[in-house]
Image (cartoon, rainbow, N blue to C red; front, side, top):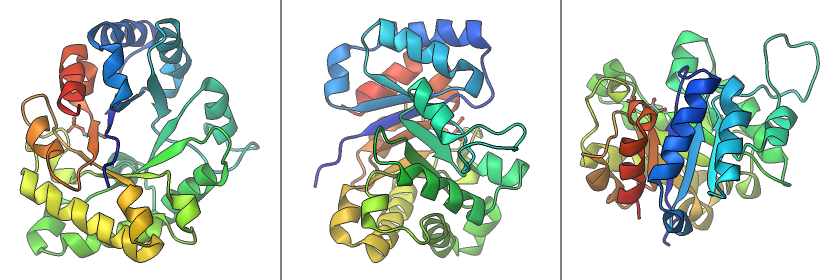
Length: 259
Ligand code: 13P
């Protein structure tokens, strides 16, 4: 089955509104509209930038989606500092990163939190916000040699209690922690090995047909120089890009590699 590639930029905690609008406009200028007939593109800026960035792409009639970097699972209430799914939906978000390793490591997010967020996102079928569920092992786990089991367990936990209908629109991103922001990209074969294991785990949970339709991305020091070999792997359906997504030319060049 051929899956439509997805290139998503994770801006992390970068760019004030004025900076975000400039970067979004630069991305819009670099992007050929017909590319978007063949590849899905999303940028995930900080919450404060979501609407202004959405507005730039909307004004240019460019089908670049916006996504959030996090969400809370309750729809409203006394949860100081949190942002809900209805809030993201009204802004026009189409994706939401869930369980990024920085959230797990720096903010104590657990597998159970990730599962609650994924379940809340996929429960809404109208104007869905697709979760981009991040998994990936530390260097210690890689060196131990147990990384395939570790990542498979993260996938299982993230989707606990969900069925194939719930999971079909979700995206999984394999982001080895040792490759994030380090300039040390996983070799294409290393990334392929884990992405194939993720798909096998999805098949075990939801059946082969569902797993073959779901997108599995790679993330971790992906750039215009290494994207083409990574994206050529059979189980890698796109990229979740950090640093290189903050430069319009680099981000557009990666999108072009996915065509
Ligand atoms: P870098 O591309 O900067 O390594 O970041 C990857 C990442 O964490 C995307 O979510």
